[in-house]
Length: 129
Image (cartoon, rainbow, N blue to C red; front, side, top):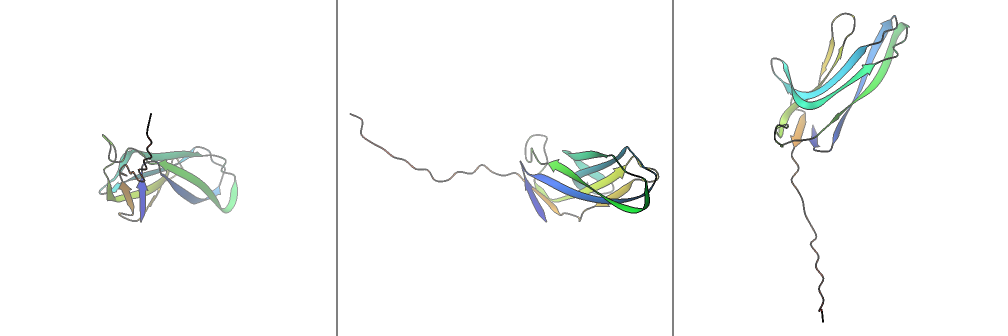
């Protein structure tokens, strides 16, 4: 379980394999949302990365990329609703054949609207003549 508040960034380390001819233009796409019949993305909680420089690979070759999803506007007007029922998913699109999808565990992401916090009120005083 991961708890995220405004100002956090969810970092997704993605590994995929490739074999065959060099390829440019594949897109890795990550999002936070709710899985139902379809995956309903939280608006704004999305990151996409063009995957470039895929070489000719005779054997299956691992590639690693990082996606970053900035977290903001939780609990704000038009923002994400705080709660513990969110998931993350990543898809690889714009590739030959079918898109590839990965879904994280159900209800593994909690979004919290952090309340303002205060502490340590200190006062000094003196006489003014």
